[in-house]
Image (cartoon, rainbow over all chains, first blue to last red; front, side):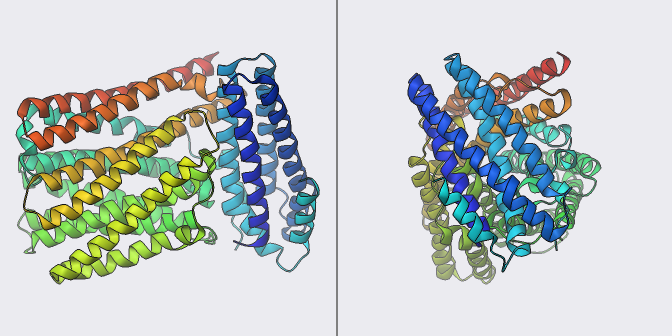
Length: 147
Length: 420
């Protein structure tokens, strides 16, 4: 697996684990713990989106001249996931276990089909288009700075 | 070469009806297999009865292959960035060809009328060829960077070989070719279940298990080499089958069984490390499937060393019904509500969440019925009592009717939300 793909895939998996922690706590009715885990997940997810939207995607767009291509689709899906996250927060605020479970399941599938597109298609394209640049080093620095 | 990035967008995704027609007709074939057991329990006397061949193909082609093709129309753009050209009309033709072909095949095999095998081979051969050609046209400009898209290509080739061997068998059965039937049959089963279905299941699992069940990744060496290694061993095994090299064939069969068991055990180990503590129905279905595969493989190897008729029957039940049907059902329960959610969100801007579109409790009841049907089939095959076989058949009809009803309920919720 090449550098950009590997770094960004690892960050996806890291976010998944925090997501699962929030899901487990909510299912057990441990609302404070669920809330703390969900906020940590939200911050990790937002950090990941920000790294892509303000750093990786512009580099890819500059290298390929494609601004209406895959990065546009991925930005659109980020917006969908932000809405899903808001609905999870609402369910948590209402302490509604079933609603939280349903919204969490929805975000999980939405997020993973998005991750599949990135990990199987977009990141390998970034690796081939941005080979030899310092993008991977920059990504590593950004991702580790917020770890 | 850079694929057109818009292939990732919703606009490029197939219409809801494209995969859905495959998912809706598949359970009817499963129910037909159960009805055949109910009507003619003597078909379980051995794997060679015409009825057993018909039931096998109702499940393998009518249910399994149909769902797999429907899912591939949806999944190839997501995991490989490949858009099947003219996917709507292609899906219509493939669907009609596969379903009518599966009916002709089951009828031709079950009633012992080779006349039906000719249209069956034309329809199934033509339908699958059209799909494989369209899929490769979609994939042709896509670089192979990851294990899943690469292994999906291998599976498509596996299916093509299996169907070619199936056509050869049908021509031999109809007296049009003079070939050693048992040899071609072994090759057909090996390529259909392992070269096609098994490799496709593994390719899907490389992403489905870690991502949706939040487990560690499969070991990198496994995802890198399993499908290619299995394909290579399958080729050498085919040569030993063709050359009738008995002991080498058994050794390679054991090697293939070990490779399959390695995949199943790795999957079960990963699932035990899942971070999701909430019971997930797809995970349960996968666990039943992997356990059944391991037991089924043991029966395959025992069958090669024993003359007893029951071992191949148990192997077939465990691998097809316990293994493939379980994991396919598990994945359908994720795919159908998600597609309903996705199309609602895009069409009307909002959608009920996944569990409102597809609640857990009917899935749980369906999977319980599926497990009971599996146990009943195994006991019925072991005991050989006609009434037990009828009971197992009835349970199989019930489980597939339940699956069909659950999919229809998602569609009902989709329609209500669309109209609201």
